[in-house]
Length: 408
Image (cartoon, rainbow, N blue to C red):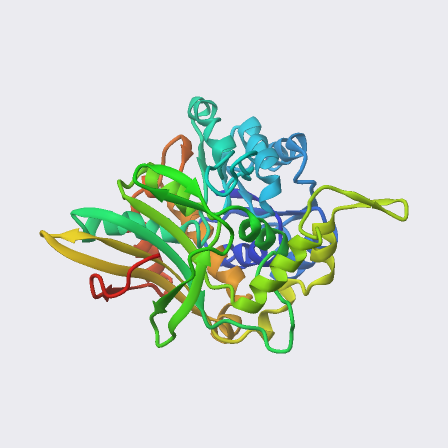
């Protein structure tokens, strides 16, 4: 398989490093708006023929199409901020190749009732192009990172093997990961962090989507691996928009363990307008306030050796099996120091990045196939989880006592 990788930041670097060890990866073109960054990664991989580096503006559909054609790729892998989803998505379609991302097209709040009703939802712009992708005979696989991505595979596996009826699906992202010595240091893209944390979160309930206020419904979720209860809050996330399209669940939520201090800092950024993406003029220069924040906070890709603790992301499923109530938590756990030692990658980047690499292998070998706009829940989870076992990637299922802990 020949791949055009757009973006060689925290996650893109992990994808490239993991792809370097895979026989099915014939070539992976490293593309970034910063040519020097792409070139530096190519130098570290030490294989210029398999990993050529190019400069590419991801905001240009035409440039994406041209690069995909020039390098005769089979798949365009989107590893940049979600604001670039649509030009890359359309660029891959124009080139007649497969497409994969880890985040969906952006949402827009409801103009009158943002904390009650969704406006434009995550992924709506992409799903609107389903017919064009189906006609192309190519696959656009949406949301194939860690969360969304593996969390959706977990949901599909549970529905297929562990439950006769699924009532609820709840994604919980937490652990005890931290970066000592920094007052404000996001573990992944601050641009994406602001986007998903300050937008109205979406909840699926009783056959429809509705929204709520950011950071609402705090809940102490009991994470496994000895971590225990950690407070999680509602955050806008793709799984809530993806799971109900395939799995007939009555309720679906996503909650993230952000911590009270981090939440207060995000609220402050919002209060003074530093979360805005619209450009403002400063001393004759136009600049986006959010881009300023991104420029001054620590770059997550440089924080890998400073991170401590574990990141746990999983899918809590509530339903019935053989007429009896059942609850399970399907999760992946990654230790920051172990991940740096074993893979040379920052833990959140690696935890996100191994998933598209697994999906690429399944597409390359024909285990996953299809055309149109697809989501992980529509594909067979069994070969995916089998590859995690083959590559020694931790995943587990924890049985929970039915009714002992109720989602809020």
